[in-house]
Length: 325
Image (cartoon, rainbow, N blue to C red; front, side, top):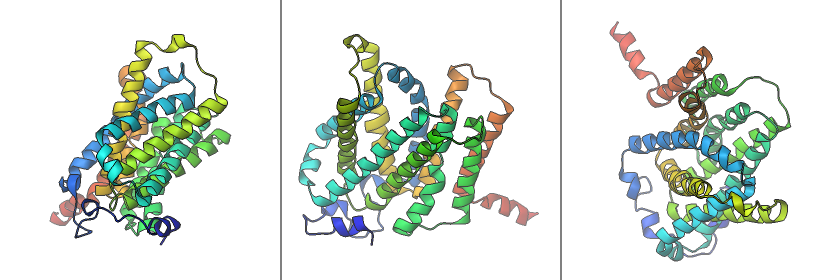
């Protein structure tokens, strides 16, 4: 049992019956849907976050990094509070608070390190190194919750990593920015593993609210202490619309769906599907910014596609075809 397990199982209000089914292996609520449903939603969220790179770029030209994060996550927390006020109040106990805040600390650390790394390395390497969480999640989940670690998980993650490398990398030289980005990837992986492990027994909406609030509050504190406020002229309708898109769709809806989905699909598969965020950013560059679709990009996308097929099917259909021959 981990430190977090021991801490949240202290004297406290009991976990609500709807959060812990009579059969711990029985899917609850949204989990009654097919796992394929959640996998497709994870792919959709990864594509949307890939598209958001364009949106974020314009916003970061106008707002300091942590001010942008504070606006994005505090707005998402407010939306969650309005939607789930009764559940947040009913489940105001140590378990939900501790897990939600830990998720928020990990998410804040991930975004902070990723952003600091981006200032010291190229966007392509930042995207590639962030995508390495698809390698880390299966191992962390295996240690944390005993999730099976198969050769197919590892093989699919390695193929995906090579594919992202072909899509995003221009060089292999390492610097401080690369190290910061890798540390951020570790925080992303830890956050996904925590959601997958603890979200099964807690109210996912409530702990997601506390995650948003923690990221937003920490970002606001850092922004007030270390960042200069932009002039009022930057607050145009276009910028406000961008912040609404980031807060409502990319954060509130996207991350809530991610957290719920990670409860109902293996974290190794979920992280693999979410890593499509990195190559999808390049794909949208090809579609919307006239980037040339080179042979290297095609090979990278092909490897990523093969990695997902391997993860989902274990290439069982090939063995069937070979046996028939």
